[in-house]
Image 1: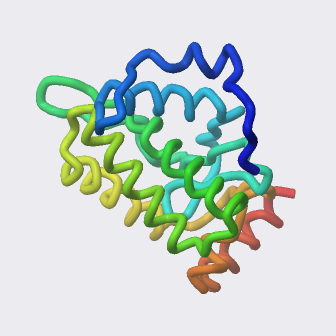
Image 2: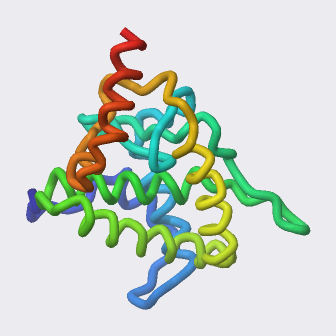
Length: 174
């Protein structure tokens, strides 16, 4: 898992800001680097809990009803990058370290918060935006769920009712 080798030239080129301290500039680099590693972001499915990832980790799924951003008084803030960061970190911690979903989620949530705040957005505003759509998404009838969606979060949370609804929507897709 951890190797003693130098970073590739491509990885070196991703680092624009350098700091050992908490830095908005470094976090901006992190967001770009993590998002660049996702092979596909798919917004064509119904995804309980707003977002998820494929079993192999190559795709991030964001619910088709979740807006790509939020409108503030003076600007629009694209939010997919924060959701994607959360999902990628969570999946890596599940797969690479074998953490329980709740622990992986907690770490991913804290990284997501750091990224949101580094971008100059209030966590409370962002979280309120996400919660608003999370409720709507949770209440909807599932029509399309990707057959390769990783079900670990739902299983670890013992959300068997949602799991049954999801599996039914997966079967309908095939």
